[in-house]
Amino acid sequence: MHIYCSGIGGIGLSAYASLQHEAGHVVSGSDRAMSPLIEDLQSQGITVFLNQDGTSVHADIDLFVYSEAIPNSAPERVRASELGVQQMSYPEALSKITDGFTVVAVCGTHGKSSTTGMVARLLMQTGRDPTVVIGTKMPELDGRNWRRGQSALFVLEACEYRKSFHFYKPQIILMTNCDGDHFDYYKSTELYQEAFRDFLQLLPPSGVVITHMSDPDCQRVAVASERTAVDADEYPLIDLQTPGLHMKQNAQLVLALANELGITQEDAIAAVAPFAGTWRRMETKGTFGNDITVIDDYAHHPREIRATISAIRGKYPNRRLVAVFQPHTHNRTIKLFDQFADAFQGLDQLFVTDVYDARSDIETDVTDIDALVQSISTQSGVQAIRGGSLEETEALVRSSLQPHDVVLFMGAGDITNLAGKMVDKKKE
Image (cartoon, rainbow, N blue to C red; front, side):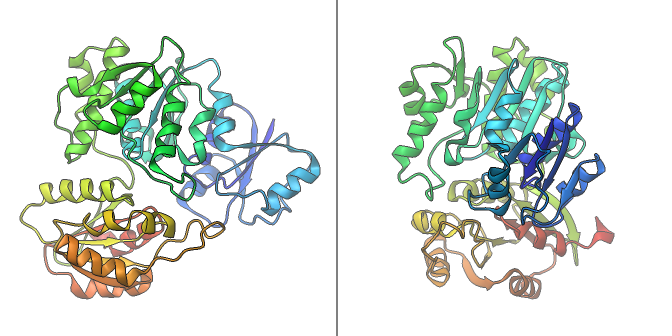
């Protein structure tokens, strides 16, 4: 087939495109701007157009696959409709290529990518040779976000946004947690957790969900699904190369999976313990200046922020910890305002940038950043400063840093670019 991927630079759709290209299909696509993921796609021989005005969509396309970020009204989708080209969303298209596989799906509000990475490492190190689609890049995958294996195991990261994971057909589900997010789509935590329950109910009668039954949300959803639940809390908390209690808890899920697949605990621990993290998950970018350490992290939800700060504080107990936070979407920031206010405890200083407006087509409310900064100062007991744009924030951060500081960049938007800019390449 000739498959065209609109939004091909996305972390999920880029993996799908690579797998389909490797399977022998002709793959092309488009995105708004060049990125490392697009450069990698091009290196594989995949044609990528850096415009999305519809002119790259032609009648010889057999399948048009679009990112969830591409609305119905987008010129490329309109053009595909005019030409009568079959269209599928990324999760629907990914589901089609998992037919015939034993699907291990990792879902959850937080920790999906890290847990999926641990699962991939477990299966690769124990000779299970899985196919993998993950929402980050991994050293074990040669710095990529996908892998084509030769076995019947297919490991995928299952995102809950807009109920995307309901397209999948898993035999085993690892559920990290389900406390609530994406409130631009889900109108309440109850509806959000119902989506997880419905996902678990896609399991066949012989399927299992592996989760933390000590987590009230997970227990409630698992019980409501009426599927067999395996309690990951019965497995040990092992030391990893990446810090944080939340990472050890994610590893418990993977040890439980190993047991389900007949892998000994000894072999499982040997495979998982060296896990050193993934791209943008407490990733040490390097140093600059007078021994200032730069860390990049994807945390954009209060629970993730707390876990990341706790882990980094534990790793660097005697160094000043400065953070730069980029709120991701107005809706999330407003809905979880009170939770954000006390999520930054443990920092010495915090800079809050402007909101990364990832849902400008559907959001109407606007975050009061000054109120957020004031609430964080009061509730988290940290010196919080409004940074403004990334450029303005960079200047403020550089002028405030002291020798031997650790500076932590958090957010799901383009804050990662600022983290990269801070590092002196000569000292990496």
